[in-house]
Image 1 (spheres, helix red, strand yellow):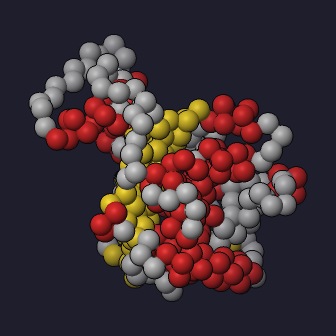
Image 2 (tube, rainbow, N blue to C red; image 1 turned 180 degrees about the vertical axis):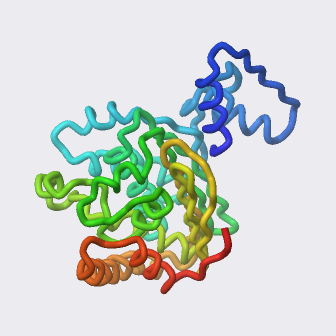
Image 3 (tube, rainbow, N blue to C red; image 1 turned 135 degrees about the horizontal axis):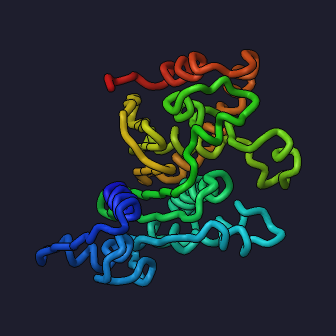
Length: 293
């Protein structure tokens, strides 16, 4: 998906250049045809994006128009509409329509798609998901073509954010959001963007698999007890989530624990106002060992 997004940008930037798709028959080609990869790139081959029915262990490349999501939400909060929209995808990836495994997948998927719909200022959201039942593991990719995380957080009055890499670290802190204080006061109480979705999802996936976010000129990965910073490049925001759902109920309970600990950490962060990049790095360092770039 990351490669496909880069190719799409390349083709858009060079519209007078003729791009040719060359393939040979293989298991990958058949799978790519089925999930709509080549159509996503812009070539007339294979299924249209979202056309494949999917199965009990994957969802094909699916593209959402952000304006349509917002219009369809009408008077209800966008987050609530997103939850309804992605329910079928969560059922595919968890192989259930209720219970702790479904709740784990639905929470992670909902929070990242919701962030893209509410904050990206882009036009499209694309996602792809796969489940490996024997491994009790799912992987989800969500990306948008918006302005990127840094552009949103530069406007946050609680932060002293000056670089793209700092913005990625701020984005996974508790209570941090790209919504202005005035906008937050106007939001519905239940669906108010408190800034805990990315924090909880990143920590939860890191504990049970992998969380990676790439935006602008940088990427940040959390896995186990290790954080890795990458000099990557992506226009918009790209999120990769890999999570294990063995012992699902215990892991579901962990979401509430992370939320509670995040609220305490946010209170500590606010004692140093505005929150500085050094504070963000220190908090991450207290939980994750940093690897070289």
